Image 1 (cartoon, rainbow, N blue to C red):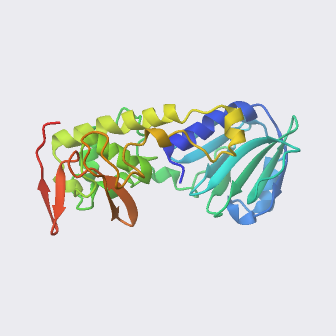
Image 2 (tube, rainbow, N blue to C red):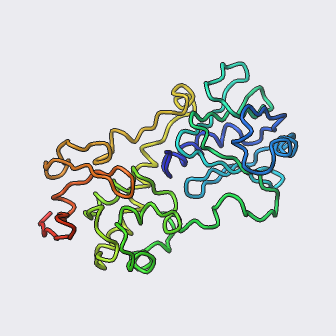
Length: 289
């Protein structure tokens, strides 16, 4: 699933290509990807509208219209948004096509069909997307060790599961929760209520640093993005633990462990992340790193 750095990369690639272009009409191949309003109203309201810019909120992409209307998209697991010439062959699983002025098309494809669009009129309350329930952005100055501790410090859930809670911090998914916890030297199975003040502060510092790092590494030109059909991100060579279970830790050389937490795959270093899980209890390992 695209997480904050990937959605930010898409936003930066798409925005300059569509800003100022008008939607002439919309072709709907799969009405179920339109969550609100009904497909016919969706197409009718968008016809003639002009893109003013884009924003991101957590993993949501918001396409803003000059009218003040907002076209909101969540890519979910396999959603992809491409700006293409009108005569380019359509990708398989293309569900929506926005026919734009200037001979371009904005196309949405999604192999698993979990992605969703919402169109909200200017001033319309958002009772549909769930964005109102999102927590702080990772780069919000209000994010601190104290704020994390206040929200999560009494929870018995693992810190990995807590980082995936979008109502606490928006935009973190399975990939970057592993990377964040590794950089913060915190074991993913630690119950949140066992973290110390120092660890909360460390986590609050690492979250924006790691995500900013991967936002930078994910930068891609519109030409490269179109050539790879929007399916190739630049983060892979820079991931330190995610997807590297069974390989040596890049810091200490210990074998990275893979486990399942809350139904999600997790990779961690049993040495650098300072804790062993044995027989249902936690034992801290004190290291000089």
